[in-house]
Length: 593
Image 1 (cartoon, helix red, strand yellow):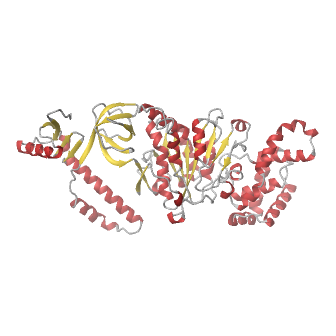
Image 2 (spheres, helix red, strand yellow; image 1 turned 30 degrees about the vertical axis):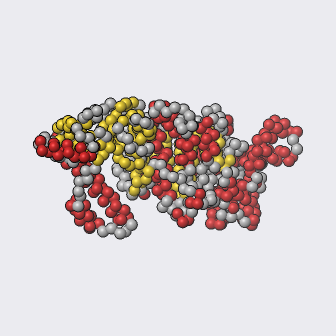
Image 3 (tube, rainbow, N blue to C red; image 1 turned 90 degrees about the vertical axis):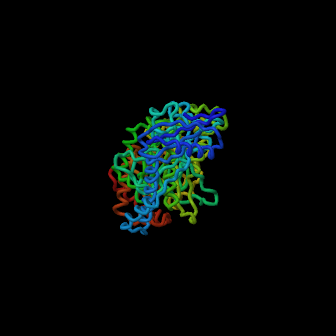
């Protein structure tokens, strides 16, 4: 279509009405001035869809003077004006009666901008990857538009061509198809109206509840906050799970990895954490990567039934989606999270899971024919996840004091935490919650391995009450796990060892928690205070959890003042602790097992 020989430059003129000889001479003079070429051959092609006017293409440039191009530019201009005025309306500085005059002025003042566009030609297409030549100035991460309407993103820049990943099907793209630069970085629409919605990796709604009015647009890739923009993690992000909040506390702005084999309850921990944020002014974003659509639908249904979708956004890139959409999904979720964080909100984001994210990226790298090494897969997977997770932080008050707390999920194979991708993410995050298959199958749920799990923020993200109540629970559990082998010789053990074994057995039972039933901080503190006072130690294992539920109900009904003091002050005074133990012992004496 367009080629440059040694003597003649070929250009294409697409028209509705054939140009006259004078018009052709004027176009040839324009091209000679723009290109510096003396000899130019113009190829004519009729296209009635332009309505009127013409399009001129030469080399990698395109000049659009058509009516269709004018309509598209006008549409974009009006849409931008409406968005701007909607934002003013939300701020209370917009008069709805003036909308007609604003649109009329926008239309009257509109002038066609016949800017040159840089276009490219498809060399090869397959498996969601397109190689294009001709777009010499395209930059990494730029969105490009194919003539069939499908969008793509520049992912690989080579000497004589660029590699593009597609955000749609490639059935209408073939060798020779045209692609146009948008000069716009890949991004996602953002706004408060995304709350309660399910969107795809490009921010388009997929829940059948209509379009979403966006308040702005954020790039997928954004620099992480600098050290001076961050504040230390000190505010708890309570999961409602006793085994985590007591021993591996998570703070707002922290990145805590959830790691374990498949079917060990990783997503369940994330779900309980979302449910526990009700009424705590925390916005939750759940990013599903490479999962079955039925699994995501079930999860959304659970959130809706519990009322958690009111403060939750689900970003979905199912296993049936192209690899490029699975690749950008966590970055899209983070862009949404940053919108709220920079408004001063606290955000919880869950990536489920980054193992499938790495697999999608590996597929893209192989299809782009990148050579293995430091700059390609697998060497750059560390950078892939580090530039994602580093964006989670707690901002200083000067920047609004918002935060993003990240709970990435990694799936291991046969418990191998020393594999390449797990060790990468472990080194990036501020701790990990390790779930063990043997514990899960033995009925210990959540199946948290106390020895391999850690929080590098530690007690800084705990309330004083929880820190005081938790006491030596980790040491007690570790001692119990070591002494557990001696239970078969229980008749030969001294009283102190029997007491330790009974206490450890009771703690293990208390750490079991039903799905979708997170505890409040006060309930956890009361449970731990009673456990450390050995109130549960002499109860049969299968009756411990029933007694705990009855005990907590008793405190709600008869001792609401204790719960109120724990909730408001966040501190466990000695007199309150003594009163909790006394009330628990009194209740136990009257309880019928």
